[in-house]
Amino acid sequence: MNRELLHVIDQISFERGIDRNEVIEALETALISASRKRLGENGQLRARLNETTGNLDILVMKTVV
Image (cartoon, rainbow, N blue to C red; front, side, top):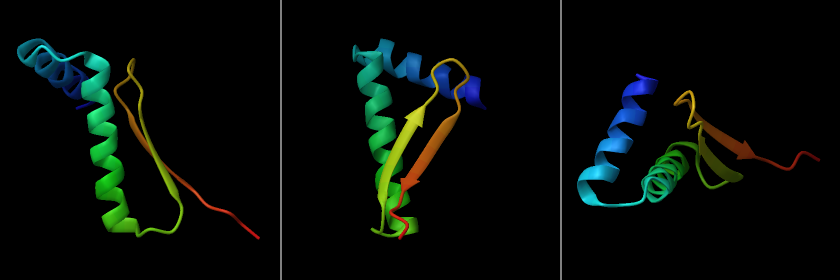
């Protein structure tokens, strides 16, 4: 599935004439938004797409005291 995701990103970029990095940023932003709904607002969220493997990582940054 990971390679399929990269292929879809390339297709959208080509068909719409949008820079590939902008499509990836939009995907990461959407993942963060969906994660906030599921995980709540506590913690800073980051999403990252590995462009070579196609793996998606969602990181939750929390302060531990």
